Length: 406
Image (cartoon, rainbow, N blue to C red; front, side, top):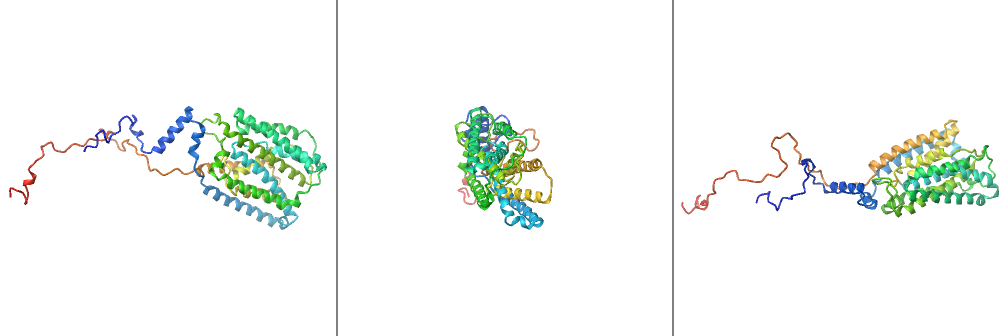
C-alpha cells in the first residue's frame, strides 16, 4: 500500500512554511492559548491553568540553607563581639526586635504573594509608634485599638481602589504611604515614650508567635489551590485587564492583615525603645520589609514563596542590626534597605526561573525544514513507485528444484 494515499495523509493542516511543521501538540496548544488571551477570546482564569502545577521547592530549600548559614554567621560574629548579647536580658531585647521586624516582613510577604505589595508598611509602623509614644500612658489597649482601626479602615479603602479601578497595588499603597507620612511628620520634635508596657517580658512568646506564623504561612502557601487563589492578582497577558471578582477577597485580606501587622510592629518598636521616637517617613522600613520578604524567597511578581525563608531572613537581619550597632558601624537604614532590596530582586529572578512547575516531557519538535542545502528538496512525503516498470512474471511457481517443469 502506498504511503501517500488519503488514508495516511492529512490535508489542509500543514502551514505554508515548511519549518513550521510541529509534532509537539502541547507547545502548539500553549501558543494558541496565549494568542487567544491576547485577543481577549478566553478569560484570565483559563489562562492561569498553565500554572496549575506544584511549584518546585528545590530552589527555595537550597536558598533557605544559605539564609540559615548567614544567620549563623551573624550570630557567631555577635557572640564574638559580646557574648552577653545572646544571654538574658540582652537576648530578650534581641527577640523583641526580631518579632517587630518579623511582623513587618510577614505583612510584606503576604501582600507580595497576593500581588499587591504594601509600600505603606513602614509609614504605618512609624505612625503606630508615635501613637503609642503619645498615648501609651493610658494603657496598651487604648493606645493600640485606635491605630488598628484606622489602619484596617485605610487598608479597606486602598483595597477598594485597587479592585475597582484595577490599578497596581504598589501604586495605590504608595499613595496611601504619602498620606500616612503627613501624620508622621506633624510633630517637629522627637516624642518621649509615655507607656509602661515592657514587651521583653513576653519576648519568647512574641518571637515564637512570629516564627509559627511564618512557617505555617509558608507551608500553606505551597498548597496549589491556596497559592492560586491568593495570587489571583498576578498579571497574565495584558496586566491592565481586570481579573474579575475572584481577586477581591485576597486583595482585601492581604492589605488589611499586612497593615495590622505593621501596627503591631510599630508598637513593639516604640514600647521597647529607650530613646524618643523621631518623626520621619518610615519608608526605610518599607524597603527593609519588602526586601527581606523577597530575599526570603517570595516572588516580586506574586504567588510564589518558600517555607522557612522568612524566619531565617528575619533572624539574619536582626542579628546583623544588633551586631552593627554594637560594633559602632554608622550604616543608614536606607543603605541597608537598598542592599536588601537589591538582593531580593536577584532572588526573585531565581525563584521565577527555577521555581515554576515542570511541564511534561514530550520530546523534541519535528521540523521539516532541510538541514542541508538541497535543490530538489520538498517537505511532501514521496509516493512509492516500483524501481522497474516490467510486467511481473506469473510463472514463478514452476521454477526452482520443486517446480512442476523439473
